[in-house]
Length: 196
Ligand SMILES: Cc1cc2nc3c(=O)[nH]c(=O)nc-3n(C[C@H](O)[C@H](O)[C@H](O)COP(=O)(O)O)c2cc1C
Image (cartoon, rainbow, N blue to C red; front, side, top):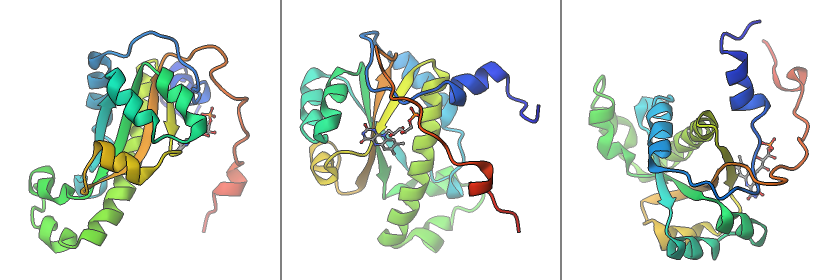
């Protein structure tokens, strides 16, 4: 009773949403990906830096190049998903800050002139955005299969550049047969939440 979100939406986004390991052949359209982005772009990040970048891997040739960098156990599902997205952090996000955070345009130089600081901030905030993205995929009635089992340096060289750090590869589509493992337990409130 404490949640104001419609119970069906709660189930769609969380309770009944599962990580998918198999997918049907139903395509994931550009319109669906646009709708997902147009929703999740509002998720908060520090200084509104929004460092997440998304590379959609659509062509069979690009998919083959991607699969080569995936861990053995992730190859078949990455090859078979209707759509795969490479999520990366833009370590040069500060270039956009004067536009993205007009309340304090000087933040670019005051806080982010050093690359190691930017890399730490980009990693945290792009990971937040990756989570928003997964929830957005679910909001579109699709399932996500996020993976960090890949060779990050190989993937970076293949698809990105030195200014981008790969964070996650996400398979996207309608779940296929036996798509999920049995639901694993979650920690209890008492194990996670402390009040001081
Ligand atoms: C950041 C991240 C990395 C993951 N990496 C892999 C992976 O490399 N291979 C894999 O099979 N599953 C991977 N998973 C899937 C998780 O094991 C799965 O989401 C988790 O057990 C919850 O499953 P559920 O959504 O079905 O409850 C990853 C999930 C996340 C969020």
